Length: 83
Image (cartoon, rainbow, N blue to C red; front, side, top):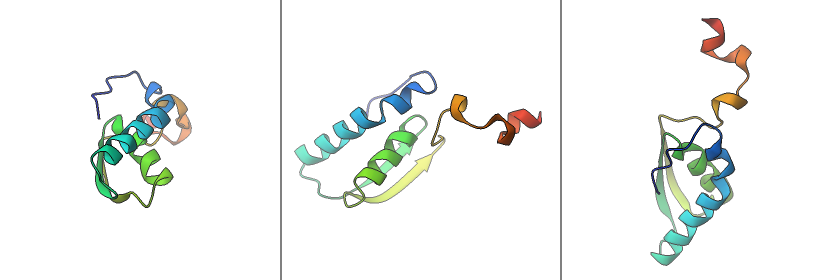
């Protein structure tokens, strides 16, 4: 996956095209199943791929990211709201 260096929720909009690209690369490499590691802004893309193609992802590791961007989270439930 490329370095996504994108602002906040832009990654959410790109989950589907980047997820489709990831599957296309796996297909080209002849990988029927593969482990997937998502870091930072790659986390929502990895979650999308694992949910959309559960038969393709053998293991999923997520690190340092969130399922949804900060702007979409409920501010009442965030630690920032408590500060």
